[in-house]
Image 1 (cartoon, rainbow, N blue to C red):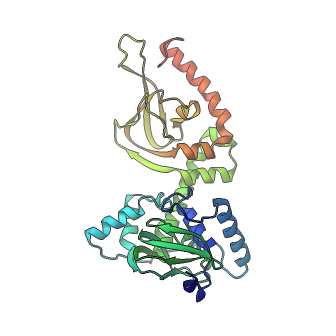
Image 2 (cartoon, rainbow, N blue to C red; image 1 turned 60 degrees about the vertical axis):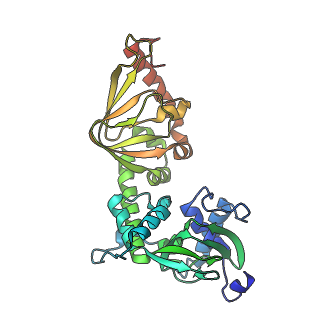
Image 3 (cartoon, one colour; image 1 turned 120 degrees about the vertical axis):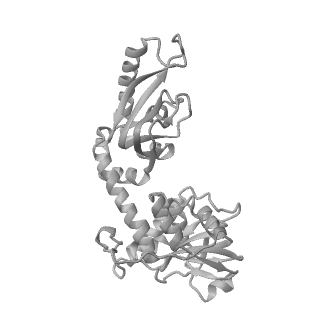
Length: 349
């Protein structure tokens, strides 16, 4: 690889940062023996690089200030086989999680395939950013300043940093085997991904501002929470969570109404559910099982069509620490209401 880097001042820190943004856990696509820097080191390298370049590079891209009304949608025809491979490659890319089905189809339409061979430089440190890349197959090394800091093995994505911040490429990515990658051009990336992510954040920040429990969060904490939410749509009568099931996250109601129902094992008919509450826009549910580490205490059904913002258990624990005391106090109120319905010894067990 020394020969490959001699003609290109490669930077591994950039490559690591891009990987981290798409895979915060750092697990996807890693080989067992890769020498990969830690997440905090990657963020620090990216932060220092952006600070050094601030005087010569444009500021971060502002989606609200960008008028893309005249931009035409880009469509690259694909075979069924290509579309299947592409859909599988982008399935776990976190930067796409804010997109709805129609927007995701626009992403798939706009991406184009590039075959790679051993030694190909996909991006080079210092170059302008032109595309965002998703790996379909193959192995790729990451270099920063000529030092290898990591690698991709058959999965992953990179290149968004330069498109988001108008900065030169912060690392070099070099193919070390034959492979294939999918590329999304700068304009399409900004029009579809960044603008819709900004709209989603603004929408969720407005929703979260109305949740009394979250008043204790700082503005930046609510912003991080908004970024972690995933919208889910349900039809009338759908069961969102089932009593007794393991908890995977909590829900904030965006639109619609849900009813909460419980069974009582000590009742004459232990299978009969009793409705205990109804919730609507701005209210939340599902946090109880996360706080107590117990199975779901009740079932939740939709009343008409409903849309909820879902927060998975890992993000819940990471982002809602400042609200824990408030939520635990709410548990006491919840227990009181259950006792009124089932009696002091008759709650759902």
